[in-house]
Amino acid sequence: MAIRKIARLGNPILRKKARPLRPEEIGSPALQLLIADMIETMVDANGIGLAAPQVHESLQLAIIGFDEGSARYPGMGNQPLEVFINPRITVLDPSLQEYWEGCLSIPEIRGRVARPRKIQVDWLDVHGNAKTRIAEGFLATVFQHELDHLEGVLFVDRIRVEPGQTPIAFLSEYSKFGLATRDAVSQGEIED
Ligand code: NI
Image 1: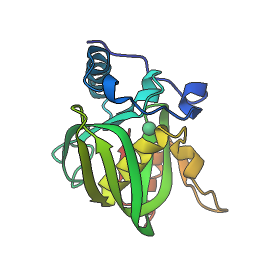
Image 2: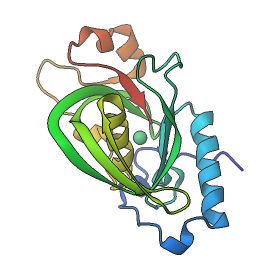
Image 3: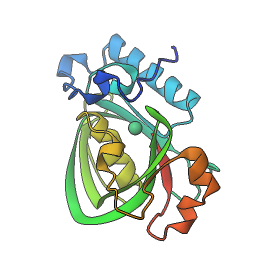
């Protein structure tokens, strides 16, 4: 296993639509190694999710995992580390919720993003078994942020800037000016 280099904003790989994994690739030693490396890389970077394009592999593969007990995401629920292959999102409730988001590929930046509050995710697990889950709240946003990476979309693309508002900030200013708490619509913060 190894910690892989994370692609940063400006690297064209982050803008490519990732290709689906073929059935024969699922469970292969090469894929198992990639998944193990992604987990190690995400843990090392203190992320809560990581998509394969972020480690220079343009494949429809992402991992998500966070712990309610962590100081960084208190009260955000619990998501045991899980692998998502060829995932698809269906919006169940298009009404919007807003969270402050960050991204390991866009370090030191936070942005406020509105996304549908309830979705269904269908994917294959590491054994190739079809899975489905309904997610709402924080987890719904994490899924959408992560699976956007597989389409070449980054959270900064989804920030709506309006006069007089500060929906995007450096992390230090985000903290210094208390943007998370000052802004009534913000509910939390993610980084993946
Ligand atoms: Ni990200």
